Length: 133
Image (cartoon, rainbow, N blue to C red; front, side, top):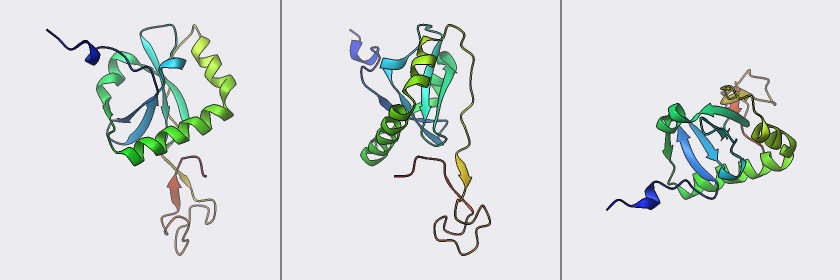
């Protein structure tokens, strides 16, 4: 007999790693009517994107690190509270097309991408594109 719990979708936000590079949040409460697509929130990039379910389900792996899960869910909660109208618009849309997330990194606001001796970006010139606390 098969274990049905493995086949049931989550009923609460779930954190995964997309293509081994980006944390994503799948929230079952905001999914579109179309079963062909899903909405994923990309933590690094602060983007809620429409993705093809059959393709991206293969590219996402479950995250098990508690601190990574806590960070991703807190980032998603902040973003969602600031963008509720966009969430509702995407959920209700009948025209869906695949969207690409914004960049993983952005220019450092202190050194404007120059790096050097900037402690904010550790001299790299860029920082993770996440919501700053």
